[in-house]
Length: 308
Image 1 (tube, rainbow, N blue to C red):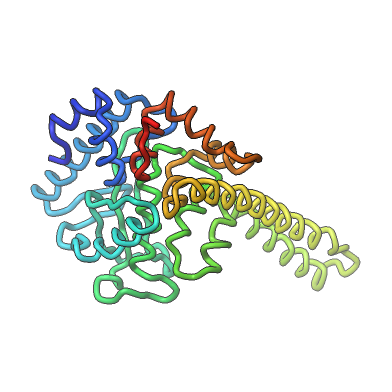
Image 2 (cartoon, helix red, strand yellow):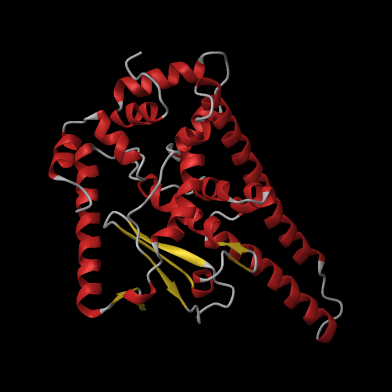
């Protein structure tokens, strides 16, 4: 069993010690999630994982979104241990309950790995390319960094984040450039927008050379430049608020600023990032703690006295 009946009872009672323990295993409370919703989510996860294990035991394989994942291709615990160490140091959580599988990615030569996660019908598992079974690196990918990145998404699944989801996940990157620039694209739509603008410029250049030489090309360069400017300005603005929020938490709880921000929703990160004036973050935290079990858990996980 993933959870005991006693844990479920303690969740319904709002037992702080139990909730902090679950938080540190990567079961973060969502900003609008009641304790009843939280308990149902964990029950759903437990049932889904049990169903997956039963199918693996009965048939030796499981089907997920059209992929066949054999039991023999499961990622061993020692590989997951690499990424748990990284997420524990950065964010104060360590997930030991997500199954993972090695795959041969015929659908994409550059594929490194990804997480399947479903919300609110909760289930999570990993797939990574088979090359990682025998070596920790493949091309630009590091196995521990890849798994840590995806574990961040699994832990924050209840946040339903759009703005800062990739920002947090890319904090696991060993490259400073990836930590800074990795979250430039928040969704696949952002990538398609830039790629589409580039392809449009290429097509326009071909038409100009081979079909219609007088065709003005400056508008296509302008469109591409506008897309890049939009992405960069949005990225820099969000990054500035993110850094301010982390520094605000860090000033109150040294060594825990990033971990506390990790447990915030997008709106909470922006709210505390915009604060001005001495004492404003402390006052904000007192108000949150007075009215929210979730924030009591966050502060207790940071080592704070939530009754102060």
